[in-house]
Length: 118
Image 1 (tube, helix red, strand yellow):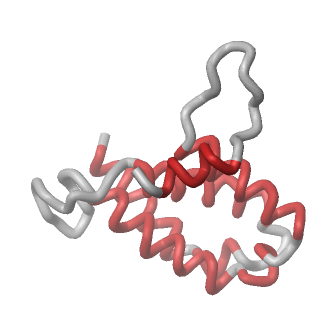
Image 2 (tube, one colour; image 1 turned 45 degrees about the vertical axis):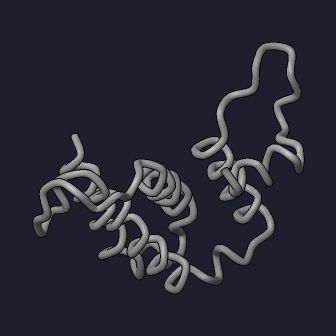
């Protein structure tokens, strides 16, 4: 449901400061996965517009705002190499398609360039 996804993303943004407080790393990782999925949901901005984010682009709009809030409020946790690696893995899983059977699981530089330059 688009409205539920948008509301969930907005909630993560509202609780960004709390997520940044120790020991919030497992919660932070889950929240970031949710926000990345919200960002990947698209963002044309058309359709309904309401305070809960209904319509197309609602989740992406709230996810982008929440992602910024989480990055600001959780900077210390995100500066950890393991956390950054987990964030990158989650981002690739959301935006890159699964590799065909037998293909390497790690995206090549060319695949990443193609992903960001359609």
